[in-house]
Amino acid sequence: MKLVLKWLLSAAALLAVAHLYSGVQVQTFTSAMLAALVIGLLNTIVRPILVLLTLPVTLVTLGLFLFVINALMFWSAGGLLPGFHVNGFGAALLGSLIYSVLGIVIDSALQRLFSKS
Image 1 (tube, rainbow, N blue to C red):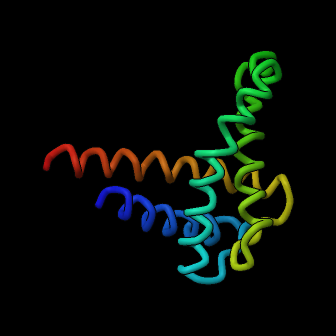
Image 2: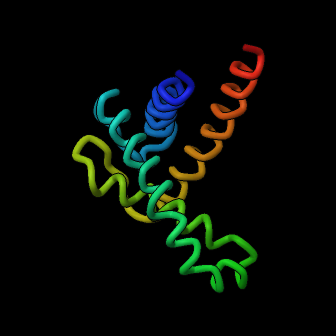
């Protein structure tokens, strides 16, 4: 139940990103759900590999290169899906930052909701 709720709220967060920032476009809620799924899969499968491969650069930049990796995952999802579009790397960087902040809020709310059960 928690996973499905997180998925729906992540899709809503993508819609909020598209509403707050014009560099990200989401056509429908279904597109947002697919995009949230693809971003989650990319972050689960591809991101750890990229983090490991770019560890020296990440250490030199004191972790700031992780923002670049997050933006690449966000931008990749925009390139893979027809209903979700990101207008370049700068838009991916800002969009991924907004999406990450909303994701932290969602995780915090879900943790409070499900810890009381």
